[in-house]
Image (tube, rainbow, N blue to C red; front, side, top):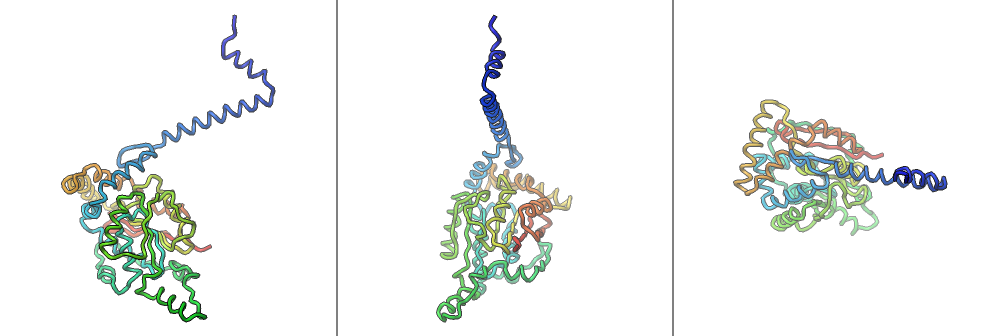
Length: 351
């Protein structure tokens, strides 16, 4: 009687030279490992609002959401925050307080809200709106952060760029103009967003507002930035990081592209700490915002997702720990409007 197939395969395997048997065993082990890793990758899921979706699908789904809302993005923010987001962003820029000559990357900043505030604040002190100089602060839990002098002095301007050559009067005058408050020459913001539709809206707004220099627009992924290490004095991301698939990777990239002494700042919807207020806020978020989205923008699903994404984002303390895990230090956060939003801050310290 013929031997069973499995037995014949075993006999054939044992009849091979020892070295060849080892190679075959390694090949089988490698194939099994690849198959296991492939299956694991396929099974990795993340949240898209309250849905569970494969990681590779979330980026496209988020892209579609913001492609749909790009034209009404400011209106969407007004709807979700009852207009308070404008005050939050003004305060966000005051907390950053960029000096002339600062090089900023604003990630997920497609429509330019943060970039325009930055250029107005750092590039032309005299033309800052009153909200930068005398903004009342009834909506925030305010505090001042005292920084070590050596950190404070090196936050935003590269020492190599701030040196003036006394041997040349013309270059000295030019450098003086460049660093003098009111000069926009060296102040620059790079707006990076994965969604081209959002960037297009930002460019149109820039033209209307007269921001024709000191700003560039780059389509890119926050989880894999195309910039060199140690490129920027400051990194900002406002109402964008919760939409990323891998938040920790976004933070790691922020640390990588910051110069030593540079500052990371994030403005994001967060968790209301008071139970009574949280109940009222949840009721408004789930019962009113999607309806307004349908009425105003004819888009219920996108607004529903945005509400759900806020609830899936880590709370203030957990997010602060994630920032520390990226290598950033001196991490703090400030609650805005009872924790509806929060400003997180961290520094890439000099070694």
